Figure 1 (cartoon, rainbow, N blue to C red):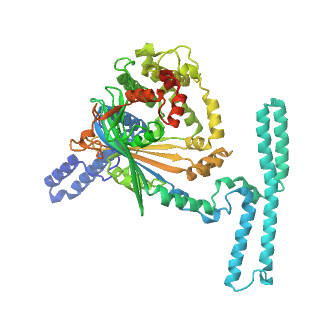
Figure 2: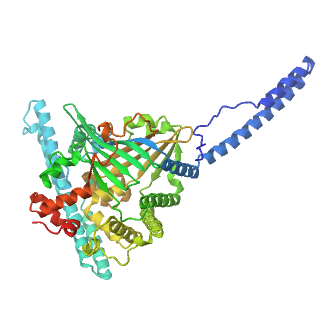
Length: 607
């Protein structure tokens, strides 16, 4: 790999050219005191020449520095580093932190609203104001009904009446127009009639808006983007009792030449009076096409729902899931990995160069919202950092969708060119096609179905536009989160070795769902960002050490799955199916067997 040679700092200290210094010393020693004036003149000229040479050198260095720090250099350097990373063996540790501190810190209390819902704003605002008046009266040891507070009571009354009248006028326009538009869209009215309706609706809107003061018009229009005191309290409780005590981690090794990948995923919750942890070891053998999960974690649920005779047979055992049952072509797994890498490289090459730039390590401390402290410490030790920001702009969104389609199409093309027998002709999306009754369900048949779906997606046959519309209608949380930017950071050592990578995502919450469809896109984007949870994920890369166990929590004889410490899921399923065919098993298990087509095909229905 070509080492990163990009400097992140500029040495602005000017130095005199050594050749010029030697020349001045020589001239000074040759001339006598009688020629002082001549020496001074000559020295002045030499110094001027030296400074000119130094300025020229600095200008050249500045131009080179700008070229070395160019976004194109950052993109190419990152591509080289990622390509090298795939070919190396390494150990890794990942940490995921979720935060919502930005939801309740640096909040302007004057912009908080009284109620969660706009329809109860006037009443709640009046009640809070009246409660404040009661508190004032009690402090002065007077009755709130006394004549002393008559002006305040009257002001509260008039304010409430004005607010209620303004809300009723606004609601009539706002909700009636929305309902009318939805109804017209459902009936698919002809364009001419729609234009007339829109014109009439606009006229009604203008007439009604004239009766609402600008203050209330703005308040009600933007109400869903505002926070209430209760929202702040909920965010604080969520942070204190769930997000701060929670930590998610993953660690393992990646050895491409040995065909080995391990991951110990874990989640910890640590509060003052409660400490709990759960983990799941995962082992993937690429050479045999097998996935291993720690069976202990599934034993209790399996014995309760499906296998009432299981007992402790799965204790301290791996559960083997054969991804290749022998029906796939030779070296198919290796071909899949190579095709995936080539497809990713192809998409990366098309990424806009403006997404990439170099940043100094000290910039990490000024990012807003702040990075988690436990993640920031190792990130600051990097010599060079490359940042990639995938924008949320509409054109960038279109690019990302096209890039995903291009990935699917490239992957499909690479795999099917090497294995044309995996191409399926004229397959529909019906359940019968997915699970044909005249042939067994095998790894090969399932791979063929996956490839068909990938091709359909790449060819835009899955009607992504309609799916996106349904997503926005029925799942605003997902659609809003998809509109937010994604930032990725990559840290390098002095030798250009990738040390870590960090990504920041925004997870939209219910509080931001209603604002995701605002007409003002910038306002909606900023509101959604402020209301979302921040997910920071940091992965660090280290050399593999012989003394480190891949699974520190497992016995020494269980570090690597073998035939003696594993349960083959395929063999176990056959035994369990026979057990059910004999009339045994749980009620839940019988229902599951009858629902799954693959089991119906192999064992028939069970009673």
